[in-house]
Length: 111
Image (cartoon, rainbow, N blue to C red):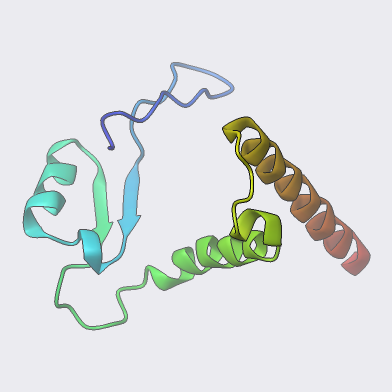
């Protein structure tokens, strides 16, 4: 999956082909996966399987889990009623726009 990632365009320079670090939970913490990630020149921030809690990746995962929860507030996305993939993608993009607008409104209200 990491090898099939598309290049990420940057403001300057060549497009990046691989990330600097890879975060994941214990489901990906097999020794052979960690070794393969390190062999690609990527810093593996994967929690090893069987390790106790407190790996430190929770502060990064919280942002992802919170964002998934925001998308779950849209019933039409939670229960996929759409027959066309294009419609489902359009509703996802609409939800993302509304989430960003709401987030910007709350942030500017604090200023």
